[in-house]
Image (cartoon, rainbow, N blue to C red; front, side):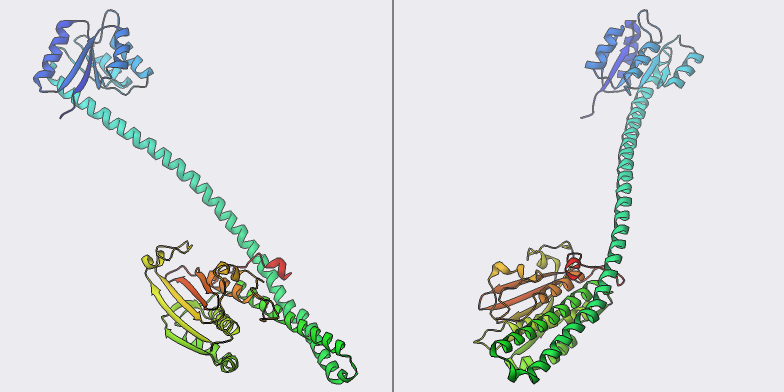
Length: 426
């Protein structure tokens, strides 16, 4: 159903008002009208009738078109205003049009009035639409300016962070040098002198003295291992990253060759079920594979021959989402590496704790180690924008699942460090 146009007629002559209405009806226009002649009636009509257009005589005894139009402007009402008069004169009409009046029509020729009414309403609607668009643009522009300022702030913070990382990286490199030379050299001498003393002076020592010397030797060995593990962690944290495609087969075979004595001693089997390639930092993943396999061999079940299975597959993003893992990148496919063993396992409550530095689930007298190996593994996974999940079952074994985005932005020059480790190192 066509909307009726609300027309407010400001006219003191009933005959003239009737002529206007008859001309509008004759054109087939669908409208409602209200005729008024005083200022008070005009103000009330604006608040109750809500006209779409106003048709006003130029000169009325108590109220005129100029006063009505000024009142309209003072209320900031965007209502089309057409002056219908036979006495306005061309000069006055031009001045009023410049002032903002929509149009004017002569009472002597009302045939053009319906067209002017339709055009005036249309132009007002278009004007209102443009105004709304401009307001939206102003809001959007303001929002963009705020966002731009926020972006500038974030970029400044990133630059500050980059400087901090660079300085911290220099500190870690200095630590590497000190650890490689100044810290390890005294430990090597301690171990050497203890070996000489035990060789040459053991017959002159009491049993308690021998035990104490043995404890010193064990403590020195443990300290050297701790320093080496911390060095490995710092290298993983600060080294530049050169990515290359690999299915890990060569890496796994290399690690197996390095651990062949332990594998042979424990009669362990390592099965490679399936491997698919992924873009990785090769030297870091070699460290990861080494740590996970040696971890599985270390925590082998005393009553079972160790069995380790390794498999990698690709997961579609929908399948990855079903795993409900805490990831910032959900809209991509993932590469999944799974390493499973039949060792002593652990209670599920420790699934996340095992990745915390220096956290141990067993006493050092039961199993050797520094509590850094799995922390290094997690750091390597973090470097690849991935996720690692451990699923342990006591006396049943452990499964480590690693998920890495197949497509990710790679910055081979990036340097990142773990600021939490820096105070421990220095």
